[in-house]
Image (tube, rainbow, N blue to C red; front, side):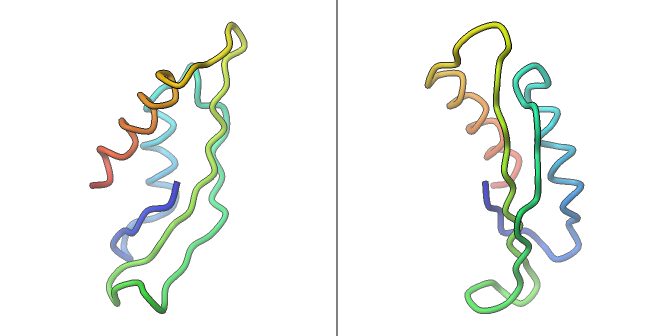
Length: 77
């Protein structure tokens, strides 16, 4: 995921929100880039996050992933 957010937003805030979307399937969240500069509005920044989605009980399907992605994106629109 990559989000354009206000500069005041901390990466940890995004991690906390995402980790609560589905605690049974979201196993790991890491920030791999924070960018301010060209093509980003002056009062904003881009935060890129890697999310590991995994079940130890079953194979995930497209609907499982779609639900998580849709829910995460709702928080940041």
